Image 1 (spheres, rainbow over the protein chains, first blue to last red):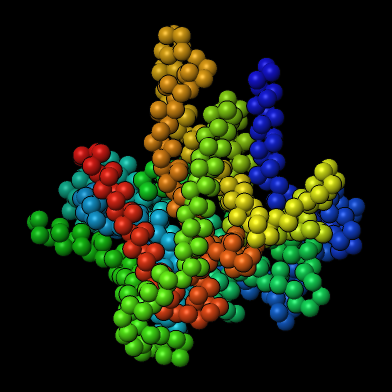
Image 2 (spheres, rainbow over the protein chains, first blue to last red):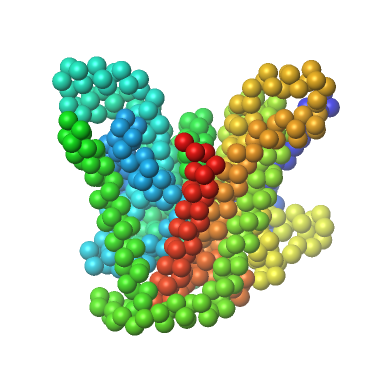
Length: 274
Length: 289
């Protein structure tokens, strides 16, 4: 009994400490400007949504709608493309052991590579190809980031389908391409959904490449949010800055909390195989 | 038949291979060529090959070595703290989480948030006038340290990184811990093994592989840290917060020292690749499959 009480206490303290910045940011986002300056505590004197209204107001310098749209489109490219690219390879690895010795470890090890080593040559390459500051260019590099997890999750999923199903279909004269699209694809739909959610969160949260490869037209939400902190005349408006963090974090957090069970599992798969 | 399926396998692998060659292979070659060239933003398209000057410059740069040291210490320390805390919380709180898995969702919150956004949150939380943390420290203790000063920046960043990623190790350990078969525990209890002894003799050895994986992943991520440091401090604080990623970024974008940034990239590439290869080789040697 006492032990259980101590457990709850430890849980409460750990949860509070880890989530402290989240709580503080939400509270500040709801404070009035006068309150922000005169009262740094976590209990606001009045609650307002003005900061959120200010975040969504387009100014000459800041346009949150654009950042959100850029993040959404680049993240979709960065999530769907790896699934399309990895599906055939996952099939070859799981069914024929083709690429298990070289390609699989190569791709999985990318997860451990500090990707900044490719950032500068990519910058030069993008400049030549006209991909600098485009949503497509950003989406391509997000696809690279998501490639390892997509391959691991899809390979595991294909391996779990009973071999007999493929063989029966092959007996009936179905070609590999047909087996892949008609048989494998529908059966691994749950794994594709997990890969999608996980990849989308990773892509949305990416910062380094957004910072290096975009300047104005294709700036993603994470980088755009940091613009609210560089004071444009008069200091940082902390209430508005807090509100922008809340907005920028909302899509991954909502997705993540809906799918937290699946995310837990896929994180494990990625970790154990990686 | 065999020939045909080999051809087919190659077709199946082609999309990923082509994509990787274009997105990483080509940049890697550029990395190598430009790192032995004299290059600036003016002659970006046709650099002149000039030997290993860039490498000499990087290896002779004290800031490079301080960045290497920062990243190594940061990676080791955060990985160790996250592993220890995650292991403790997972085992100690397992009885609670076992009945109510949604408690895990509360812990998972920080790691779903972008590290860059977490960094921005701490800019608010630690701010001396509007930040709640200094406010409460003043309230209760009458003083609050300058968290982001050169003296304290390293420690502050370690705490921030640890608090955001302990949930990750916690999740790994919890899953591994709850998959230890209960018969083993029961058998040990029959033999009179319980409490701390049960943990150190039975459960901990079973968690050892997870421990290695958790430490390894967190070390890698800690070593290449960029986002939260960049939004929180930038490259400031007198180099006391310059990780290797920040060093490369700054050399390229702030000082336009392209050759140096590229030489540092290649060095990092070689070391990372060498380490990964070594780990893979060791794993293979231990498990002759």
